[in-house]
Length: 104
Image (cartoon, rainbow, N blue to C red; front, side):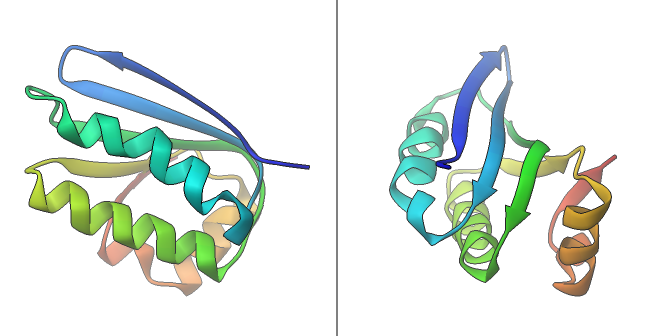
């Protein structure tokens, strides 16, 4: 099943909600969801709400790293939120807590 993506923004913060399997097949959709947010003046933080993610692979981790680099270049911060225990374990193994703020 393809991943579902929805975005909302309020003042200086945007939230990208992901649900389903996050893997290589989603790279175009994921990029299309965050690219316009990085262009928004006044937006400071982009939160990736991971509560609905059932599975993510190494390419999904790579996509988040790339997004973080692009966000930093645009002067924005990326925050990961609400990962399930399985997803949190993967993020932990990948040392993502050193790169991202992770909010439970």
